[in-house]
Amino acid sequence: MSKFFRFKEFGTSYRREFIAGLTTFLAMAYILFVNPSTLALDGVEQLPEGVTRIDKGAVFTSTAIAAAVGTLIMGVFAKYPIALAPGMGLNAFFAYTVVLGFGIPWETALAGVLASGLIFIVLTVTGLRTLIIDAIPPNLKLAVGAGIGLYIAFIGFQNSGIVQNSDATLVQLGDLTAGPTMLAIFGIIVSVILMAMGLKGGIFYGMVLTSIAGMVTGLIAPPSGMGDVIGSVPSVAPTFGAAFTHFGDIFTIEMLVVILTFLFVDFFDTAGTLVAVATQAGFMKENKLPRANRALFSDSAATVVGAVVGTSTTTSYIESTAGVGAGGRTGFTSVVTAGFFILALFFSPLLSVVTAEVTAPALIIVGVLMASTLKNIDWDQFEIAVPAFFTIAAMPMTYSIATGIAMGFIFYPITMILKGRSKEIHPIMYFLFVIFVLYFIFLA
Image (cartoon, rainbow, N blue to C red; front, side, top):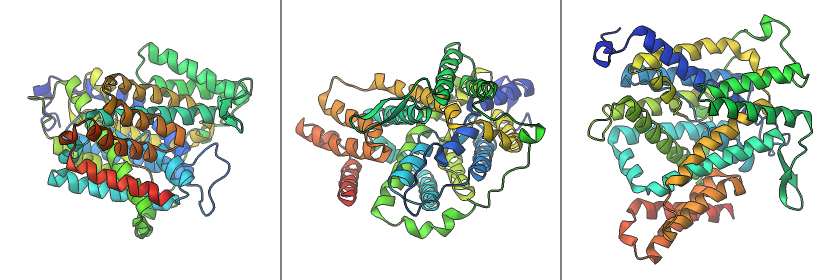
């Protein structure tokens, strides 16, 4: 095993790799509870006509399986200390834009995730993936990430009750004296303190402490025994294979935009994470990542597996840097992390104490982290600032990641042409311009 993962070459050991794998798991374990809560639309009482709520237990199991399988493939096949799981932002897009906003059944949405994963595999194998990523301007990539951060944070503020509906101003400050809202505020404060102290897994520990506070104050029903903590693995039968049975429903303009959005966001998440982790670990050689195609294939294969069992797009996690910081240098780190995700399958009863108020702080903190890319956008160039701003602002304001991407990608060629910089626009951007114009025409 040590020879397969080249421990001697990287100067590591089983103990160091184990600690690194555990560290990575703790840093991203929050997704096991946030993802089911998000996809099941916790806190949303009214669903669109003809749309049912996805089974929360099945999503918990699907999340753990997708994370375990994807991380294991990354560790054994690509041999990188990078963990994967259903991505934040993409799960919110799946639930709040596709299902809640468009009124598309979750089964069809899963089919869209499956399609994006299959396309991702083809693009990776053929090398077209790099061409498409290079065609999209860096500033728009940064804007997409920041916009998703604001969108996720907005959902967190809503779920916590800090922000609520207003007929006069659309949104307003909620009742901060309400018990659930006060619990969420406590969770935000605790999570901020833990993150500011640099604690690995601060988001996860913040959720644990918030759940405990909720049980102590009577806002959350506590487990009555070990059976409410450790239990049997929830069945994936309610979601397994739904992506196949509804695959024929994806051939519409609306679903085309949905699939493109899944692709774009996964592109950016994966590329950014791979570069960040590889740079920190010292893997980059002449500004290139060795075995890049293997890492990308691992990511796309995990998305396909996740869609089949019943969860949104699976992607590489930036929290992997926590494990690298703890000394992880080989794929064995990922193998350890995958093992903990498998072990976590038996803790599904804890979903009952992880309420919307408990997950809201996690959404807000992740939003803060994602919004950090704002600083790298070239705001001094108006032709860049306009599409970037529309991309960022439209996501939370229209409650749609797809709409934000569409507006930014439409304004970009317009402002660039008017500025006399048409030669800098890649032909693919003109194609996307047409697609997104048709998208708005279809919505109208």
